[in-house]
Image (cartoon, rainbow over all chains, first blue to last red; front, side):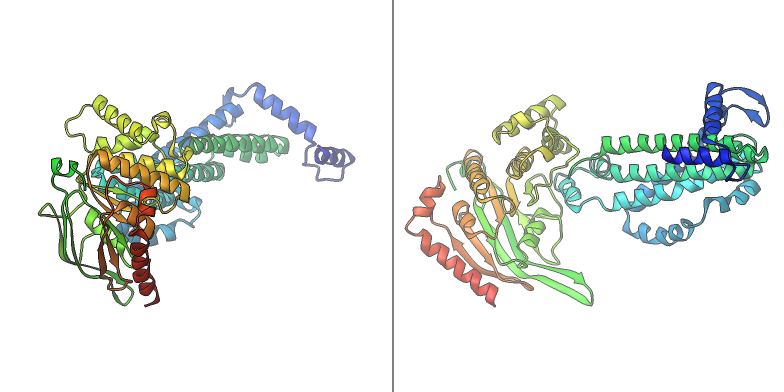
Length: 243
Length: 267
């Protein structure tokens, strides 16, 4: 509160850049944005609700595709020490690359900005999921596997009733990290791709020199990121167990 | 053991020239040099030895969790090549699956080996074994809510639910406090009087070996552990702690085994 007071005063007195809006203006614009979130008035003019929905759908699509790829591969690789060793160097090289570096490749291959955004999210979400799934399935305590062996659980039953539940908490951690990165990356990707989405909304406000609305965008992005993280933390807690 | 032994034949374990080596950096670690002994069906053999004597390794070989590098283990004349429901394993750290309820842990064993029983029948069997270890009230709880002694009773129920001929126990009470340990030892004696089984128990506790076993096999310190001594325990069954501890032969037997073990440790 004190900080907001100092900010408000500094803007009023004229100590800051004339572009910087006072917090009261940000607040009133936030109320305005939230009171009519779903209007569509043109290609570059739509409510924040529409922008958010667009971004979330892209994240959901890319994230789901990444799950479809990363979870089975991670599981397969994690339960095979030989494959783990073979795959590790590839993952180690590709993982530190910013997902945005894949954007031109996406554009070249897909020739469609919508699919490119989804592709970039797919790449961003892929690595944490893949690495955590590999780690989770390869580090199932040996005793649990030996219990399954002495009981003659069989391959499928061992996977379903021992390896999966043992690995699930770490897999969910991977999903949470992936979602966090996907939500970071979608903003940047949308700024580059344009069209619609909360990232482009923020970029567009810069073009309009409407800094107050940029703050509105940042607040909304932060709030949604927080909610996404909480959802995954709840899932993690639901499926965790005390050894 | 007792008269029940005759009604439930089988469960004989025969170890012939069993060796086990593990690959290590720069070669092989010969854990066990050729080891041979026979465990008669229905008898209780305790394996003792200094740590690193390979007694747990030997148990894992009998369980079929690992294969010997040479020699052969036979159960009732058939070579052991893999784990089987005829040999139940009780693990040191209980090895309950923490994401399952207590009942589901026992039920899991039966689900893996249904032997034609319906889901309801399997559930009844699981409940019956939980009843036997006095944990019916905890059936729907999680293993994390149980004390160490209770966890190992669940482990025991899970193993016994498959009615194995042979019970393999890897320091099952080693992680428990002395009081809980003696309670579980007494319970085990009671259970074995009801249903005779061959038992191979790994322990570092000479008192436990003398209380429970018909025979104590002492392994020497590794590498290349071998059978250092094979001692028959003469106490009558049914046994209880007081009678065993006050048996005139007890101090001598205890001293003899301790002597062998101390010598092995010093060697």
